[in-house]
Image (cartoon, rainbow, N blue to C red; front, top):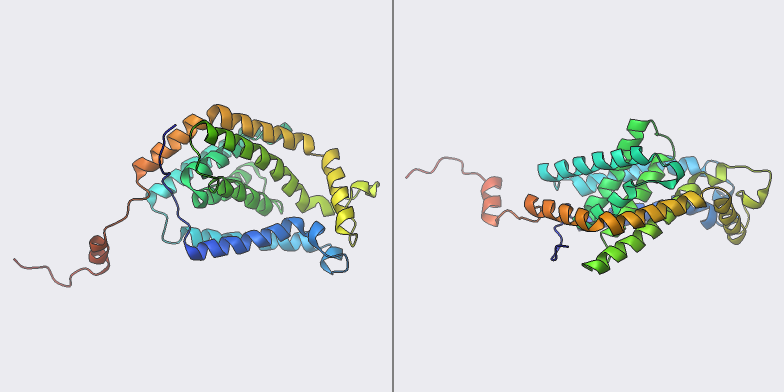
Length: 281
């Protein structure tokens, strides 16, 4: 494992940070409104709420991506982003989501860790979008998947600055938690649409938060928890086995690309204000 400071492939300036925080807050509400809405509110009784958030999230994600990439992505960053997004798309197609085997989440964790939270967030978004376009998986669920994948990679880049075996163990633990939480979050977007004869696992508009939370827990146990646990285990195992060499490769690529290299102030001034006439000697 190579020691030292990571090279950030895409920095997050202050305006983008504020936009990201705002969109993430709205994203939390978009996922959790069935459990967050007050029983007497119009939102708790609205059948249109999931569609409203499904339409709102893509617009907000575009704003954040524009903030993150405006004037800050050079050819090297775009090339690396394209390669990793293509790799992530291939991993998603390889796994297919069947039985919870989704190795793409390992890529989100290590890329966000090695290349920084901003790069990771964009990679998670782009990978989910590209894989959906390739496989025909475009639908109202896609914005929620993109947001959740972006969060996973972004938070991986914000983990404590450990190195060596401690870092690998930390990433494995984080990968397990992230793989599990992804399924819990994604199921929330469509749960209010699902209607069962047994309301013990169905969303009941206007019921107290505690009652709906218990119903959602029962819904998870009855449907996707097994797949979510497999996703968590696969992500953790890949972090343990393939994490060290992949992290080293990504960090080596970032150093060679010199993403952190700054242009001298004199060079910037010369480019911004070229002389009106050639200097005669």
